[in-house]
Image 1 (spheres, rainbow, N blue to C red):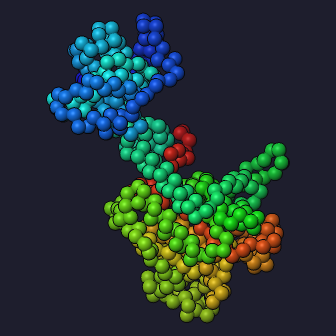
Image 2: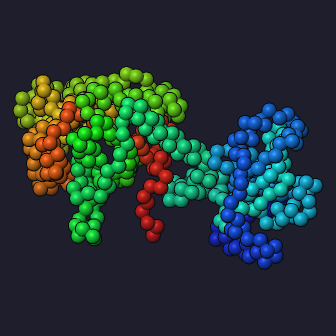
Image 3: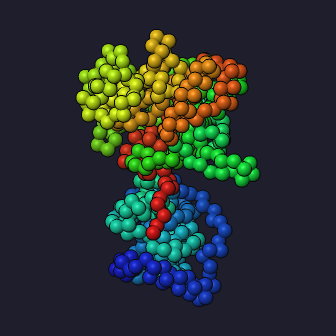
Length: 503
């Protein structure tokens, strides 16, 4: 029978589908049994419970007084004469089942051999025992066919590793790869940990609009849609920041949101246009408080799903506190030997950029070029968690200026393995300064910069009512999950990533 199963697995999928449709019709006609009619099954025990409770059974030992009622999907089948075996899998575990002619009787055993296929869902009643070969097994005393699989399970060494199939048909990936299910369980635990840490600090979870007439809160290209009832063009949000800061104005002291953002940009292993972010804002706090909070969140998440000492794609990472802290200017000086603090004119910075081989238009300021140097020559070298401080005002339209150096802001980005994971700053609460920065961004947008920040007049109005000193933080949940689960691509931690349509 094993040989027959192997030959079946080698058939074209459509041929197997056709055979299973015919088999379903025979089952209905010959047995009067429809496997899609069953509404529920009272599963009393998970397979994990069976393994934990009866894992101490010795070879040939039966727990005959135990009555196990469980259910799952048939993952393997070995049909023999009067004794057959299967492996059944539920959400977390796999366990062997034994079907015996002497136990089930001729009719029920014959039904099993004739009608049950790999991929089907069964509800079983039986007791656990350990076989002579030492495998914990349930001896099935009765069973119910709960649902038929009309398509075959993917082949172990072929279909399961095809990333196109894995992302496009995630349900097949989850069936075939238990480790993928575990990744998404860890994702859920990481998000729950983020919530727990924030709520322990008295932070209120809120929801803000996904559709907005202005794409604000970040410098990014938005997705555009149309609101028929309002007869106006709208945008999918690129960030939650401006709405959350309105809530601080409105006398909520600490708020956060975990939700989807949408940026109409490229796709690679670290970027997906639809992604999950957490943003939090605390009244009366600053960016240093946000650094401490970031460490607390990430350390707690790492401990929840493993340890603070971990490995990502073969590279050891340490999330032990405190994380390294360094200014953008110092990092550029260390890695490039270029001291932007010594430049008094933009021309000096442009000359340095040309010497380093950067393509420039000749209109860039020294502050913008500092950011370019960092992106080109420093980012990828920041493997261990590093807070990068003091970004130029020119690239930080929503951050408060550093009083000691007004060309720079009290802002940080957290980098891990060369990639940004978090972004935070002491929030700009001066409505006049904010309006001027919005106007500067609007000029850039009119000059063709699709990622420049839109002018948000209502947000300026909100600031005019008074925003207290506020610290704000955003963490990319998908990237954090990647690093804590050793997932190579962002698509590995998003259940249903967008895919190009099949031709």
